[in-house]
Length: 429
Image 1 (tube, rainbow, N blue to C red):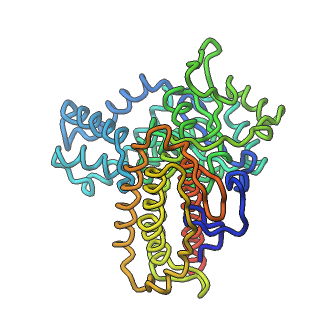
Image 2 (image 1 turned 180 degrees about the vertical axis):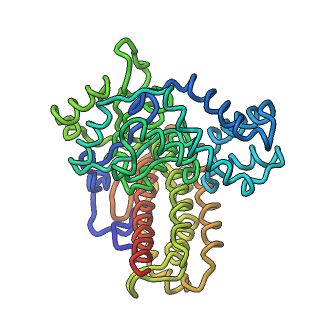
Image 3 (image 1 turned 30 degrees about the horizontal axis):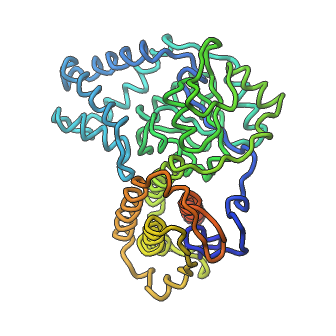
């Protein structure tokens, strides 16, 4: 069952003038760290060409370097541009890289594995270790903060893990909640959805998460647009644009440690109100996280108990709520001056519509179409619609922005359910 405040559906355990004030927003409980230029000294303008040249030389027996590198660049740009939450960046890369070259990825798998084991480590000489990186990670984990590595997911996991080893913060030694790579991520920097996808997979809300990064356009701006707090690892002479939300802190990595540990600034950050940009990024990022979570639970019909839903039932519920509650509600708000929004009890649909007997893969496809239709519709809202007041049967006065933020919270509830299904399945093996 939903077992929660059913945000976006309308069923809640108590009324509230503004549900935003009732949500379990906590102090910062998770940190996202950029890698290159933040935890690791690495000038990408030097590193990436050297990486491409080394890889091209290793694959020279399969394809001429002069032919391979342009396709590598094109595939990298395709990953950066990807806006499809249903496709991993690896799938995007493979289509743009292997298919035009007529290469068989499976046939090259061992050769590529050998490259990352034997050749890629030689690039460490182009980088430098920051001693404070280890101190920051050790402090964060000792403080019970979850840590995600939010590097641009344009590399395989093997390459990311190797660079973390160069930084002295290897994932074999530290328990990261998530490490972004092209195998699992569907959005890349500088899209705000990249950050929304990461925190959705971590089970975190924007107001519980702070992004630490050195690149203003890749790290700070998109993370802030997704609703995250930010800390800018910057040059002392740099000045952020005045027309952007300012970072919550700035300085060196050592400065960040003093700011967070000694000054305890993480404890004083107040919740940020949702914005149209942040809630749209979250809805799209959540959809990407649903696709990843869906793949982690192979038994679509298994219920942890009779009182709980299977993956099939959760997916059917999401599909019907999106198509029959969320989108019609938003259309009504867009078309009326101050609409009354009724509550909808959708839990009984699971039995009434016999969700358990339905096709889970088809339900996911239908949910995806419905969510994309919602996103297309609300993306066209003019500013006055986003701030338009509405009256909810239980919540009282609210706005379009708040209602869309409730949809994102509803997503998180069911992502947590799917995560519980994954762990229940793992324990039973």
